[in-house]
Amino acid sequence: MNYNALNQQLASILQGFDLNQPLGGCSLVIYHRGQCVSALAHGTATIDKATGARTPWTPHTLALNFSTGKGVLVTLVHCLVAQGLLDYDTPIATYWADFAQNAKDTVTLRDVLSHRANLYDVQQVTKTAKDMLDWQTMVANVAAMTAQSSDTLTVAYSALVSGWILGGLVERVTELDLQTALTRYLLAPLGLVGQVYFGVPRDIVPQVAQQLRPPSANSARSKPVLQADSATTLDFYQQLPMYSDWQCLADTDAPLNTQAINALYFTPSQVAPTDYQAALVPEGSRQFNYYHPASLQAKIPAANGVASAQALATIYTMLANGGHWIVEGQMRTLITPEVFAALEQVQNNQPDKVMPATMQWRLGYHRVFSRLHAVADGFGHMGYNGSMAWCDPHRQLAVAFIHNYDTTMLNDVRQFILTEQILDFFDNVQL
Image (cartoon, rainbow, N blue to C red; front, side, top):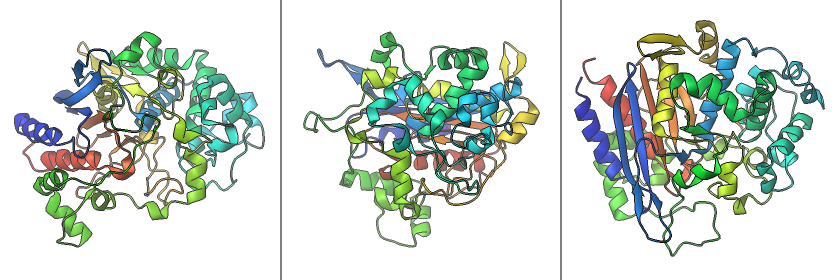
């Protein structure tokens, strides 16, 4: 297979990914049939404030990936199920007695992983966003919280709360802190120690890709803002191989801008505003900066996962291989066949009340977002900033894309460009 052709295509695309933002960069790692076939990077990861020296992105650059880290957290959970420490259909309160408070005694791990436990209201468990920095307080608060509804047919993405539920559960059944459990059961077996964190050590914080903004940007602003597309950006889109297909989907011959392309994948109008606010917007969230050193060092596992693209792609390669990983020629099973068969099953097909799409939740993972290719067996997780990591066991494919551009998934299209281009290559070459 001519992977060189793939890498030339993708490198050219990454070179154009600055789009409307001159600062920032990204990395992209792809595994096929257990082998790393693409390890690409572009742009600037950090800028030294004193000297102005720039550190370029590499496939091993650590970055804040927001909810893309959920894929790591739930993979750890599946490893613990495979070890017999957890069961999907046993009430969480069986392992964590305090969790039974306020009629949650029957809520199961399956309910939480499939986002139908109705435990998503972060405003119920915080007074201000800064409360999220206190791990023990947050774990105690989610143990005491009340579900929004008892209707387990409702699908509502637990954007923040699920991390404290799952992380707290992991600590109780392993009797280890979350990072130690992650290292023992997932990172060490895959050779990834020091490449994935839920709570970055202080001395590692300077290695994490920074949030880069031009000097003219509002220094008090912690959230991205929508920017108008430049002529260069619009021209870049028009040169993409999938552009004409997008126009067909949009039923137009008119030029497509970022928002028009994003609307092919997301439908914000289907989101229930009240539920969206409850799930994602604690009081004072506009002033809460996930890139601040204190935030990076905190344990907020649903939202502040830090990892390299190389590490994420490795984890998803293990998943693409059915839970197995080869170390020095020896097959190592992290997730048993029975557990893997359970985790990849679609749990619901309803529109999500919080996310702007039908997510087709598996046990902790969602579908791969493609409009141009069939990826029925694919699953993974995206992040608030448009980062992504996913696998497709059918194609024996694993992909991770991370970045530090100042954007969100609702006003960005980079992940969709890459997913469509990668799938097109593997669907149109001789395997």
